[in-house]
Image (cartoon, rainbow, N blue to C red):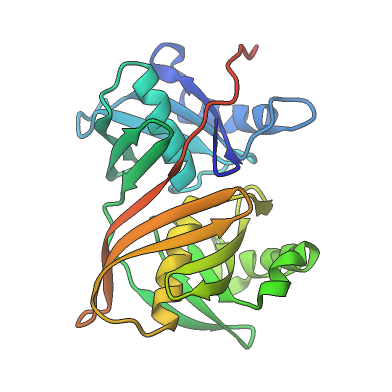
Length: 265
């Protein structure tokens, strides 16, 4: 499946029953674009043994590491779940966090159980915005023409991703350029993929909140459109000026089936 160009291999783990360790070992071979299927990550669907949500999403990066949360992967997960008999509105758990999914044909929305802030940070004499979206992100404002210089973005992204200020986990790095008050362009260097990706859902959220912060926008409910290489993602949120807090965060965008097949373990 793919969500705005972020591609994933998904499977029903209710019967295969691979462990978290199994998935970590499996991901590098499945995600390899020459010797495997090729993907930005693998996603396993299973019931919630803790009975806190309807389903559980297990996600692994191409290197086998854990991503925390993957917004585009979650939207694909939701659409996949519906084909397996899930209702179009349901809850799912990623680690300790419980999300709500809404599936409307190829448009899928994920409600994030998240209240967050935009923190200004100086890293290697560069001003960045640190925005936690249930996974680690920084946002780097740049000029529109710089977004086309992908080799430079990869070089800067790799440097910041591994910078000691973000150790030991590292961070995802988002380069943004504003189009209007509520529209922006984004390129994301993703930790675990170790490259630019065509889209990043949690990065789109971080970038929308960061762009709102840079404009010193006021209280209220907002809808921002984030244009990525793979399409456009919509980020809904509420900003509370008194506490400088962002909440009621929802990510909306496409989730598309590409092909179905068998993979031999």
